[in-house]
Image 1 (cartoon, rainbow, N blue to C red):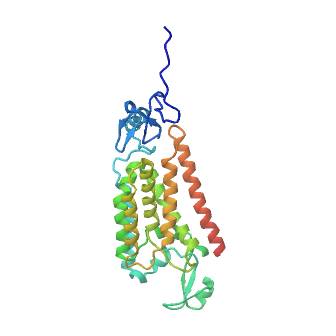
Image 2 (image 1 turned 135 degrees about the vertical axis):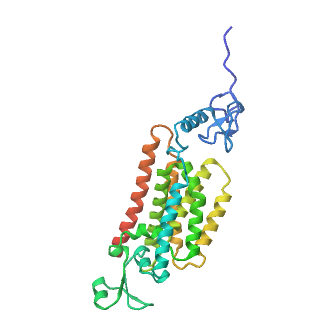
Image 3 (image 1 turned 180 degrees about the horizontal axis):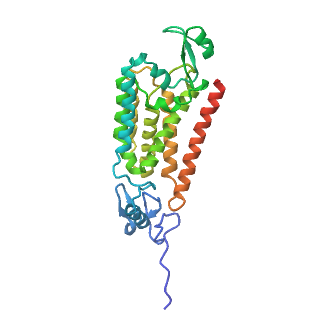
Length: 311
């Protein structure tokens, strides 16, 4: 007797990728292929297919996270170090005059240099002319203070400003590091920080001083949102936290900006998307490296172009 092939599902009906003759209405949370009840494996959120479960088991045994990074033994170390650096800079600023400290002029981000002739005014002149006239030179990126695009990430004055940023970093940083791995987590953090600096340079008045880790922290929140979206989880909690951190960052502060928040958020989401949506397998790490490098080059290109325009 000739064996008959199994009946196929009606046209237009989704079928299981492993059993084409069976209707399927559930997608695997990792690869998003349709799976039938026999192929559904319970996961932390929804269901996964047998192949993704097998791959996840291999990654766990090899000490890798779901997105290719080395699984950290303590996912709070990086966030703790970053918080300690921010706290040390904050204490140094308080010890040298608080908002009147000269450290804020050197570490904060000012797109262009300015000559302060008194406590309330400034002149757009060269540093040499400022020195001859007895003014105080306030350095900016366009006149050579390039370190400010990084140092401003670690600079705070108001207590509510540093509290809001560090609280969010401690709350979300370890969770994100556990999912990405230490190196990938730190890359997202600094790329987001650079994105925040780029946003300030492009969208803020060229003589305005801006500081704070808000751009980098918002980038982490953006990365968390991308991962939440990828997993198909409820987006409302992370959106609420973005709103809370936004408000805390502005309570009583005079030198934070929506421009830095926006730039950091976009950069963090772009970096996270490169990591999260990279193809699995041997091509994943090269894809992630190329994507993060491209994101960094774009941000640095924006910074350089704006610096040249202001110079």
